[in-house]
Structure formats: C-alpha cells, structure tokens
Image (cartoon, rainbow, N blue to C red; front, side, top):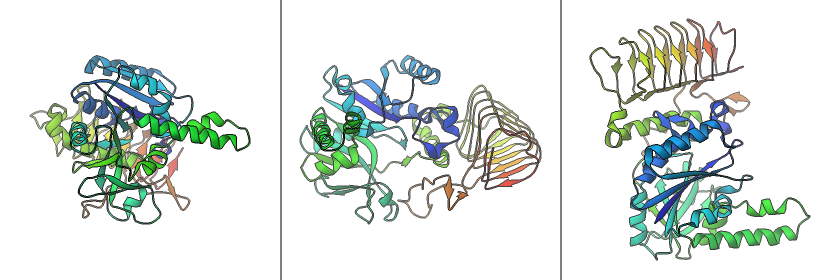
Length: 422
C-alpha cells in the first residue's frame, strides 16, 4: 500500500505570488483551468495501490480549502485530508510531526511532493526505478537538468553515473556543483523517519546548550534538503531518478503562466477534453486554450496560445487574449487586448484598453534553462514581468497598462508602466 503527501506551505510563504495569494491560498490558484494542487492529485490517483493523499501545511482551514478537499474526494474517490501544522516546520519537520498519520495502515512507501512545482509527475516511473536501483529501503529524489548558472538556485545533486546513487548534495551552492537539480518530488519508505528523528533529537540537544527559548518548535523545524539529504548522500541510501519530461517551479505569478503553458500542452495526452477546439460560431482559437463551460465569449474574439479562461468570464467582440490567465467573473469589453497578464477575479477591462506584461519565459535557445523566479522588486524598482490585475479592478476604456500590478483603484485614466497602483 502507498500514500502521498503534498506539502502546501502557508500564508507567510508565496510572497512573490502577491497580490494573487491575498485572495486565494497559492496552492488553490488555477493553473491551466484547475487548482494548482489538482495536477498533483490527478498524478497521485493514477499510481497503482495508492490509497490516501495527505496535505500538510499551516494554512488555517477555510471555506475554499474545505470545498476543494470535499470536491476532490468526491471526484477521485480517494481519502484526501488536510493536516495543519502548529507552525512552519520545514519540509522534513512537517512529515515528521505527522508521521503517525502517514504510517497509519502500514504503507510500504510514500511520495512527498512540494505544491509549488509543475511537472509531468513521473511517480510510477520513480516506483519502478526504486525497485531496480539500490535496496528496497532506499530513497529516491526526482531530478532534472538545469543550465550551469541556474543550477546554483536549486539543490544540486552529484550522482554515480553507473548506479544513480547520490554521492553529494548541496542546497543552493555558491559555486557550481552539478547541473542535476532537485525537483522537490521524493519517494520515501518508513525508514526515513529514523533519519529525521535523529536530526530532531540533535536539535533538541543543541537547544539545551543555548538559552531557553521556544526550543521545541525550533527543534522540530527540519529541512529535508539541508538536514537530511546532505547527510544521506554517499551512504548508499539515496538515489536520483532523472526525468526528461517538463518541470518548473511556480514561485511567482509569471511562472504560473509558464506552468499553465506546460500543462495545457500536456492536456493533448492527458485531458484533451479540456482544450478548446475551433468550431463554427465560436471564437478563433490559436494554440492551446482552456475555456470554462460557463464563460461567455463573443465569436469574433481571438484567444491563444496559452490562455486559460475561468468560470463566468465575459469576453466581448474583437478581444485579443494571448499568454494570459483570466480569472473567475472577469469582464473583457469589446476590442480590448490582454497579453502576458493575469486578470483578477471580477475585474473589468474597458473597451480598447491594452493590458500587457513582459514574458517571464526561460531562454528558448537553451534546452536546460529554467524560469527565473524574480522578486517583485529589483534595485528598488518593480521588476518588469507579467501584468497582474488584482480582485475587482476596473481598467477604463482606452487605458494602457504595461508591466504593472494593479489593485482596486477608482481613478485610472492614463497609461501606467512598471508600477504598483494601489
């Protein structure tokens, strides 16, 4: 029997995803038409003999999260539960804190997936790899290849090329170590808790030597990457399965649009019913586009490539949308243009207005390039990236918005570029 654990973090994470994460927990943000987490769950339910999925994080349970869990359980006919941490415990501390829940039913192995990654999730392949490499008690990291410069922004893996054993692991090194990087997707067996427990006990002992503070919480904050993988490397316990399929982090809003493109492309083989076709009396579709059935779109609109249209969206005559995510209830009025942008919930773009951002794509000439998850600011200025319209934003007719973040405002009557407008 198998289980899966998805680490969803909490509200103090995802600052690069603001202002979108103000309205909905980041793991529930729609990417390619469905909540980010749903892609993980859809991959997990395909694994033979996987019986339960546990979400671990420190979000307060709320209506949106509860509704998502209820709907997912109904759709996938599987136990899907949320376990709330009392504090941010790290990637290792969270699973250690809830080890009894994970081990309930005596699973022989369990997957751990970070919520903020986009992937083809080759989970079955990782299972087969584990059976072929090392001992049954070995652990597997999903890895991929990055370019030399970008690899230093990730966990770097040095492997034995014959056996795929991890010989050395360094999290975000200051100099080049390896072009094989950690994808944040793991396959463990119950023995991993012995290794995490040893770190926990060491942390407790270290705390006794320091001045009394909130020591127990600090002792239980454990990172899989720095605290566990670094120590396990070279001991014949840790192996890397390298995937050739797509993978990306989803740290910023710009990377959500890139992830949407990757998932939309994958739909050709996994969910072709989610891709909008060109049909008589409908809008012109270019490339991969998702349109929710409740959306109302004028047949003269042109959508795509890489466009996701949410529930209840209205799109008027002559509208052009490309490389964008249009969220629930948005209204795009006649002849407006939306490029490289996220249009927030219940926002309105007036007639002939133009909303445009700068693509955040990886270098197309480098097959191993990854997306750069930029912070909102660089050198005191807003980083040119996609344009984000927050919830209930109204852009009047004929206004131009470029590379900006726009929150609800009553008086937008000119052009804006590289600004945060409150």
